[in-house]
Length: 145
Image (cartoon, rainbow, N blue to C red):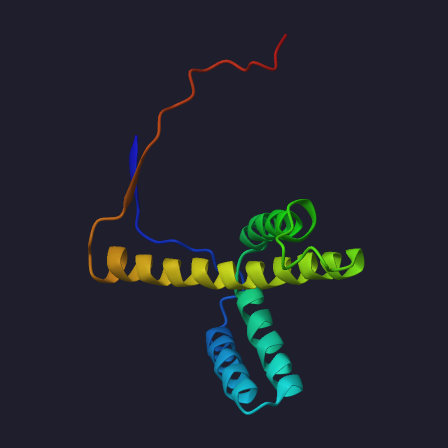
């Protein structure tokens, strides 16, 4: 059996306002941090990040969060660089958690952007998509014994 993937759907909450909120949050955070307004910039970034997080399927976010946690623990606890070597243990743990959150939201955004571009090229424009060749199971259950 051969199937062609025409559309990728990593979206969880499909409200059209969420991408607008995400983009507005990022733009506002960048503008506010440029003016030295740190607290409002952090609030705007959190709002934008939550919009991205709520737009993505929980399984996608969980996978990316696990990769972010592994990366954060490796960077700050297991093999710290010379820049991180002087940090205390609680600060290293906090850095690992923040790295995990930032990585998860950033990669969720990348997955959503890739899905939009794939759907545009494969569906709307009509370029070829990913093909899957599947074969049927040989039969019989291996659990029977």
